[in-house]
Image 1 (cartoon, rainbow, N blue to C red):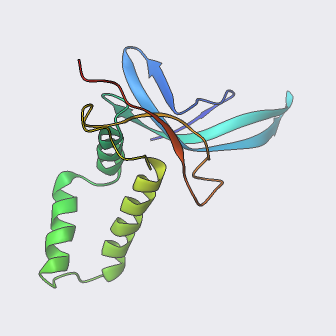
Image 2: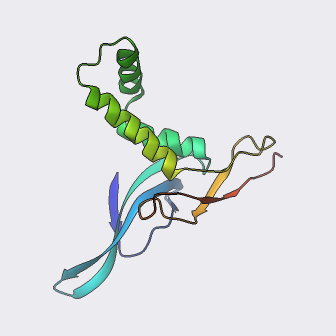
Amino acid sequence: MKANSDNNPGKFTESKGKLFFNFNIVESEKTDEHGTRTVFDYDYVEVKDKASGEIIRAIMRDKYTIEDEIALINNKFRGEVKDITEYDDYQAVRVTVKAITCIAEPDPIAKEPIIEEPIVDPIKEPIVELAVKVEPKK
């Protein structure tokens, strides 16, 4: 979903007991009758936690239903894709989502790393590095 704010939302926000992952954050200037101000336009998805797998799942479900995703894959491998650009678009979304959530190797004890704030913004830089904090298994 799309949103905008007068403040940088950061990668994660909480609202009404829900956790949201914010991405594609673009800062711009907006001029209206009150003058010029900085605004932030961004996409967001609701997530259960900060684990990279959850973020990937949430963004993919925002773009494709599970049924659409399975149909695209099956049609491609059965040679039934009528418009190859649809499958290519799907693959491009997958690559973009992985770049947004690019992480270091997970700690085998914790099973999955927890994403912290990005060191490099994936929108402004082609190479994404993220600081990763691995929470120990309790």
